[in-house]
Amino acid sequence: MAAPSKAQPLLVAGDIDGFFGLAIDNLIQFMLIMGLCTGVLGFSVELLLETVLPGAAISILVGNVYYGLQAQRLSAKTGRTDVTALPYGINTVSLFAFVFFVMLPVKLAALNDGATADEAARLAWQIGLAACFFSGVVELLGSFVAERIRKFTPRPALLSTLAGIAISFIAIGFAIETFESPLIALLPLGIVLTTYFSHMPMPFKLPGGAWALALGTAAAWILLALGEPTMVSTATVSAAKESVGLYLPIPVIGDLIEGLKHPLTMDYLIPVMVPMGVFSVLGSLQNIESAEAAGDSFETLPSLAVNGVGTMVAALLGSCFPTTIYIGHPGWKGLGARSGYSILNGVFFCAIALFGVTFLISSLIPMQAGMAIVLWIGVVITAQAFQATPREHAPAVAVGLFPAIAAWGLVILGQTLGAAGMATGNFGLAGEVLAKPEAFLGAGLHLDGLVAISQGFMLTCMVWAAASTHLIDRQFDRAALWVLIGAVCAFFGFMHAGHMTPAGAVYDIGFGTGWRWAVGYLLCALFFLAMQAWSKHLDTKTQTVSE
Image 1 (cartoon, rainbow, N blue to C red):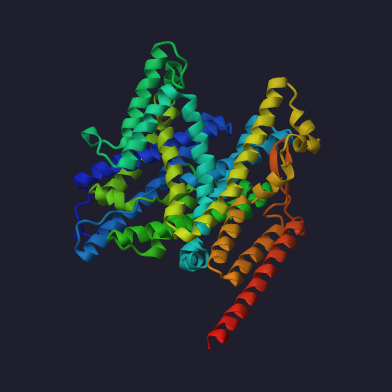
Image 2: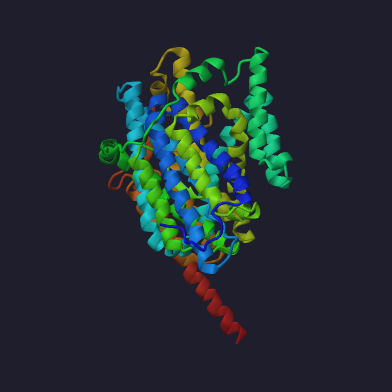
């Protein structure tokens, strides 16, 4: 799409400020990918440098260039010179969801079946590609029906689900790691909270995130010089220097097909992949509306469609991580950013990914220096769930948090059992413990209930938060419809039906596997419908008395 000749200047001074802010945000995503993929999933550095990161960079470039030129077209059409492009990059929530709810369980299941560490990591990557591709397909298809979905689904149902992931898998995890490394991470946390909560301008007009990274990194290297062990080392930097080179993106269609047709993929399609695609569609739609409120009215369908195409491009080129239209358009507009900041961001990440510089950056900058930014993102997403909904619907948001927090607890339980096995040298310890459920009950832990509320937790969040919203509004028939949706999902095992194994919780998907919960949901639906009839009876009685 060519930029119109009469559009606003492609690059203005405010684009530099906007670029630094957006680039730091995306840089944190790249560092998270490096850290989580190597530390949690066991991916090799070679796989990341040669395939995953170049694929992610191209997907970012596709969207950033499109949204930049889209802003130029709007500028030429309206004659305005203050049009700001939609911000775009790696989807933080999907990143965590796919790592912890898709790829990590797949890896653990493969190891439990006797696969080697490399084989398990590769299978996790292939199914991660499938998850990313499915998410892109949902985003692309959703661009045609996004408005209808948004009207059908109460806002608390969507925001509370995202908030549950944000507060548990993003904020709590990084808060723990922050206080584990206070000499490095606490000052960046203070800087980030100060700049983003108080909106105080920082010296030299640098974003607060840049100051947090700089001072946290300086602290890590100073501690290393003083003999304290840190996440940085000269040996790692030397190894990272050796990895710098040209890494051109190569399609991985064969691996994507392997992931798409693998039986495990279906276990996570409905409970995780489809909901994350829907959330991305609706989140992007809300961000487009936010841009319109700030004065920039972009066409909805192409904006959402390109978002989906960017995600599918990522999967085809080896990245497991969807892209999305970011929140914060008014903020970039306030900085004076226009179109150039978006295109600069895409070009920058292509450069560092295609030349293998990402590993070098992550070896120089410790994760502790940037954790505060991600922690803040988790806090803001959680706060937004309460702030962006009517006050009377706040309890519905709270109800939707429970399943996500329970899912986080189940992951911690699985990690604890694994750690106990490694510490004792008895790798079958987890299986022995799980074979004695009375031990959990004796300790006050209802394992079966924890598994039930955790399996398909994103669907559970939506169903109960939506039903609660309608109950608050005394729309009992709509609440009944939502729990009927829950009954169908539960009956086929997409929610609740599952069991804990040494490799983590697994779904029991099939006909009637979750019939017990389905019956419970049906009873709730009948009760809600009875209350709808009772409500009409009371209204009629009141009207008769008044007459």
